[in-house]
Amino acid sequence: MKKYNKVSPELLAELEAALGKENVQTEPEVLDRYKTDEETDPKMFHLPEAVVRPASAEETAAVVKLCNKYDVPITVRGGGTSLADGAIPVCGGLVLLTERMNKILEMNTDGLYMIAEAGVRTVDIQKKANEAGYLYAGDPCSAESCLIGGNLATNAGGNKAVRYGVTRNQVYSLEVVTPTGEIVEVGSRLKKCSTGYCMEQLIMGSEGTLGIITKATLKLLPLPPYRLDLLAIFDDPAKALDMVPLIAKAGINPTSIEYMDNSYVRGTSEYIEFKDPPYKENGIYVIVTLETFNEDELDMKMEQLSSLCEEAGAIDVLEADDRIWAMRRNCQESVRLISLISLTDDVVVPVDKIADTIKYIMKIGEKYPFPVPAKINAHIGDGNLHIVLCKGELSDKEWEENVHAFHEEVYEYAYAQGGRLAGEHGIGAKKLGYMAEFTPAAELDLMKKIKLAWDPKLILNPGKIFEC
Ligand SMILES: Cc1cc2nc3c(=O)[nH]c(=O)nc-3n(C[C@H](O)[C@H](O)[C@H](O)COP(=O)(O)OP(=O)(O)OC[C@H]3O[C@@H](n4cnc5c(N)ncnc54)[C@H](O)[C@@H]3O)c2cc1C
Image 1 (spheres, rainbow, N blue to C red):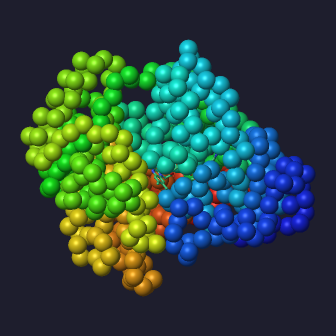
Image 2 (cartoon, protein in one colour; image 1 turned 90 degrees about the vertical axis):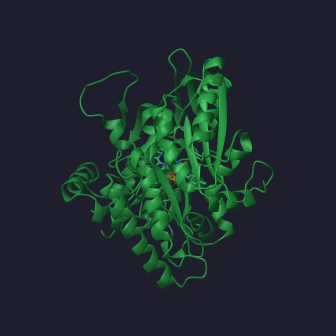
Image 3 (cartoon, protein in one colour; image 1 turned 30 degrees about the vertical axis):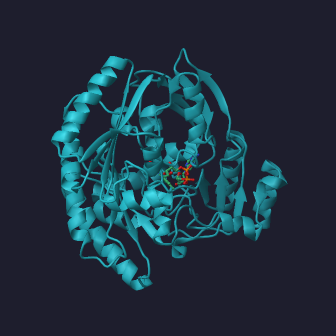
């Protein structure tokens, strides 16, 4: 890994001149706040040397230019909800916060778009659109705490991807500060465009390594007025899993199909203290959301879906209320009740392979000594599963060896199905080794060449995705 210069008094003085003294911080208690994101293992923590808060693309560009001049790395941080160690400053240097770029600049319901700065909370974008009768379709479970810039940088997925796609499908254009400090607008507010490379799509999912996103023009859709959440409860995971391809083929076009294994059903209901009916102690939950523009269509689809679930062997099929979504949204947080240290995987496989992949993971999971067997929740309708492993009382050595052996088995299986390491959380610093192991050499080489061409001094987010 490249050796960088330390943050010097000269750099700090120039940063203060550019941003104002109050927006450049080096107090130990401030630095301590940014040594980790959602990472729970202290071994992965890294302190930054300074934290900066630019208020605009121009100020961001000034910071980037100074870091090129002084050869100091920058890690961009949005809401810090990364599950891949993406916001941890693994090489020290600066953490750049986007939180002061927090304005929704325009909402245009004739043109169906919204322009927002990178530091706006995702939930505020969703609410603003909804209040006017429109939909911003990006919907990660962390929407209350993540920022739109972080969603764009990780190409976040979430609960509506089955119908609307992931974050990259919700975007017209981006304003980006390049790794050398230029401000560029990539993409355009067009339905179609074949005018050179699709740069905005390259930025999305680049996890802060190719540019700092400062502003985005997001797509809006008409908000379907009719919505229904259906909960199908199973007592056999195989039956629940085998139903998913049937829904996909039925022409129902659901917005979400979410899966919670029994360990999650018990864990999250305890975490959010919700054990009223329809709670079932041995239940496995599949939540399906339908949205339509016509009430009759909703009724028809609901009947079709209910019959499908019953034929597949559901022990209960009922209309669900928001509490079911509260359970689903709290899956990640509920793990804290079991273990202070845990990790979340984000494997993605083709949709027709997800049932077999989950069954395989459940089978191999039995032989590992984790305090609870691998917990699985999944955006099952788009092939993306989250496996949570808990450390509990295992020693560091036992934890590391078993996690590694488990990952090798799971990733080999997933790649054999045509899958990948990450469906929505990114690679960050967490899966660097596996990225190198599982990505074809020629593909990895192309990625490294792009990184070096854009960021010759490796200033932006080094130590993420791959090592150069
Ligand atoms: C409870 C919980 C539930 C979650 N559910 C989902 C889910 O359903 N779907 C999903 O996809 N993810 C989910 N996540 C993961 C996480 O919320 C997403 O990865 C999210 O997109 C990160 O946004 P953030 O603002 O917190 O970014 P951060 O964590 O701050 O940063 C993430 C990465 O993006 C880079 N970055 C941030 N802002 C910018 C910017 N403006 N320009 C360039 N790079 C930038 C960072 O350097 C880092 O590499 C969940 C996390 C938690 C804790």
